[in-house]
Amino acid sequence: MEIHRFEKLWVAASLLLIVGFVSTVAYGAIGPGVSMVDDRGGQIDPDEVDQHPEFSDPGPRAIENGQADVYVVAYQFAFEPGSNEPIYVPRGTEVTFHMTSRDVVHGFSVVGTNMNTMVIPGQIATFTVEFDETGEYAVVCHEYCGAAHHTMAGTIQVVSQDRYAEIVANDGATTTTTAGDNTTTAGTTSTNDTTTANGSNDIAVATGVN
Ligand SMILES: [Cu+2]
Image 1 (tube, rainbow, N blue to C red):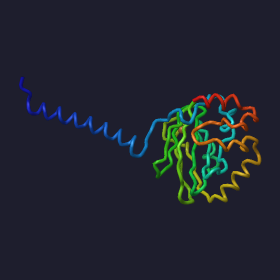
Image 2: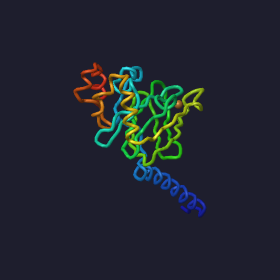
Image 3: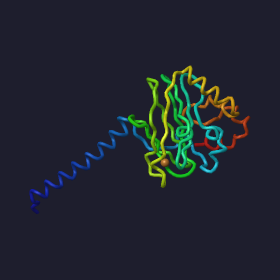
Image 4: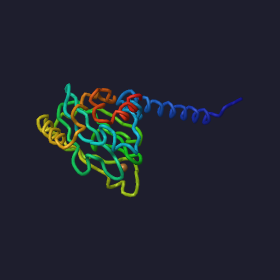
């Protein structure tokens, strides 16, 4: 059977395209570390976000062992914190963001950087970053989430570690869940004794299984 020259050419071209597409996906996964939101951050009942030991009081947590955690809840059409008040993060410290959604799928994209994640109801998305300088970043929702999606935005405020400690202390003064929860390591859930004390242990254990 004779195959026409052009036929061979097109087969070769399409094979080359496929190899090209697979290579870009492989590069994204291995190089810049692009990955799907998985179970590393744990799972959560989207209807019970308000009862979760951390997400019931979202916001920044104190720096421990050179590492800080920040909890953010997304909903139609805001980030909490983020939209009404900035998300404060410390400069020169590893910051792990823990994010979940109360309603539909949202996105969290930090403008001008490669930081972004999908925020999926039921799932806790995490990523760790370090900010070298103080300043402000804009955050936008980059997953269409409803009629006012285009208004869903916020800011990240990078402050000095001293200022950050002040902010966390002031925030903690009005809540009961902040103290003691900070020993949670990034991406895992509270298995420390202190979570038992605040009565939210069911949820902490449920997410810990994952
Ligand atoms: Cu949104």
